[in-house]
Image 1: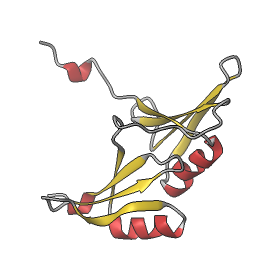
Image 2: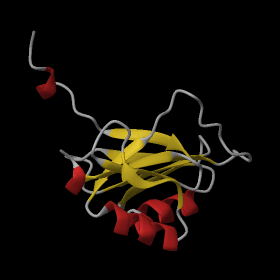
Image 3: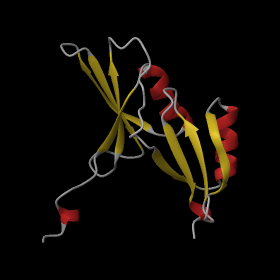
Image 4: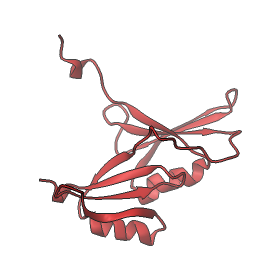
Length: 138
């Protein structure tokens, strides 16, 4: 069997959002990502915005999909888990996020049955984002 890591590359995770501008602001201003590109599809009545920490050519990014006719919030569903971001000084990061209006349903602390410190925040649509304390991993 060939080395699959040379054949495949993780490119992006797509989530559907109701308010594209609010979502872009959350991911760029609160989480420090960059808006990499924004593509409008008038015939399909949707917009794709790609955000991330580096160019799409060599980084996994988040695709925010906004369907123009979507009037009600999406149901996240039981199959979706979360996005995960590594951070240093998770307590300071969470404190700053909370001061800036982020919802933090799981405050930072040691994970169950482990020593790594984690927290969970929510984006404007309720998607869970796990923060993992890089400086607490063992």
